[in-house]
Image (cartoon, rainbow, N blue to C red):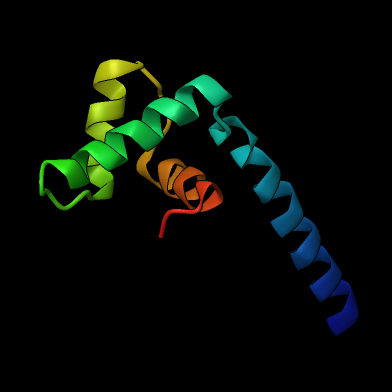
Amino acid sequence: MWKLLSQWYFQLRENSAQKFALSVLDNYNEAILRRKVHNFYRNDKQPTLKTIHSKMCESTGCGGGVSSLRLVLRKMGFR
């Protein structure tokens, strides 16, 4: 019984991970995002997910959420 439940759980997790495929940006938008983050540091401001998300929505009109932005920033190497 436990084996069956664990297989179902991991299969469910794999399917939910596929939903985040929309959060992958192309190279152009990744460069814009990287530039936005570095501009915060140049202006001596602390970048937060909310501020980065609002700036990205202003400039590119991307419709992703804050959690998707977190995943993209992690993939790009930001902590």
